[in-house]
Image (cartoon, rainbow, N blue to C red):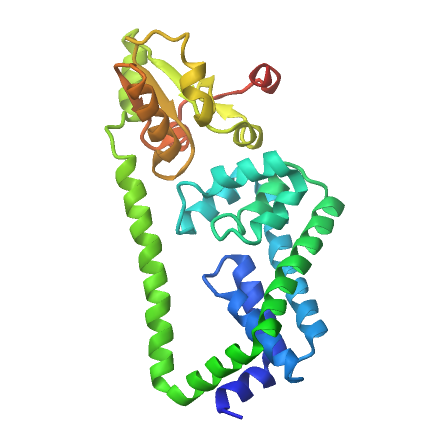
Length: 317
């Protein structure tokens, strides 16, 4: 048997555990192909299929469990940290919030198959106060479904996978180069898509100092907080007097506002992505002076300005 196949067979369970745990922690490790290889080797009797499933489920629970407790302990701070290291930082939290709100605990199952959300969903569940038994129940079910699927696919296509492993083993150094090129191409694609998104939210911002100057001159603009309801629940702080309007409903909910009055929109997302999208939508709807707040809520707080808290009951109503 080729040397590569021998290596994978000898350390298969450790590789499954390490790759799965790394992926759940947030490292850009392709855990699903490792599971598929393990499934193929299980058919050949070189790895126990049940053992591979067990270590993959354990790695899922350990990795996601660590983020769950981090979210429960540190709330919005953990979400901001994850988004800073994410390849899609501008949308990862918002998408996770939508999943958690819509599907509750079952969202943890869907998140396993969504790269931009899989790492953010567990700390989000912790931040919103999901109970530990409920989290462990859905997390275990999600891990079994996710790992079982890829192990099953590996078993189903074991002939093709083993042929590919044989080819890679015979290619030697060329296989490593091909793998490196593939990983680089994947990262380049993600970064290219991110640049396209950043260009879509390019527009003039207003700084915290400029906003304060307007307020002191008696020309205070309408201030809108476009964080989601879940985002506001996790972090109740707001700029005093800010109106709560979610991004998806901002145009509809702003119909009662004067179109000739200045509007400042903020969020706490990287690059003010949600605020910029909301500003573009309002400008397209006829509002004449709409700008995102540079740095969002974090910049306001960092400048030492006063904050108050959203009234959740009033916001919900």
